[in-house]
Image (cartoon, rainbow, N blue to C red; front, side, top):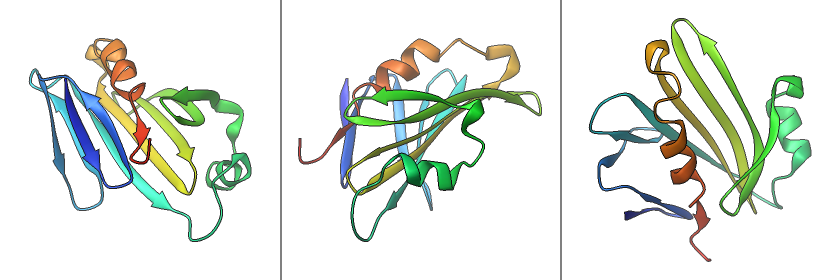
Length: 128
């Protein structure tokens, strides 16, 4: 496992996964090319994120479930859209909100779920 540090937050990624900075996000994929994780961040100018902020970002929360990933908490859902299996998270800690997606072809649905969960469970704020 390697440490991926991204400013205010970090996580561990397995050696067979690689990360690269895109224009607006960090993209993490494994060598077999099954799918990829994309992480975007939003910083709040004052105060901390909370459940009310999530309701504003995602008004139809009935499709989402509460979750905790590492030191972050928020909401999660899984869906199928245009032949792709997608998992999405809005998770926050302090004044930082991460929007995370994992996407793969429908034929590969579930193959990386355990690995993705293991990776996201290592999420930590840089100050921890």
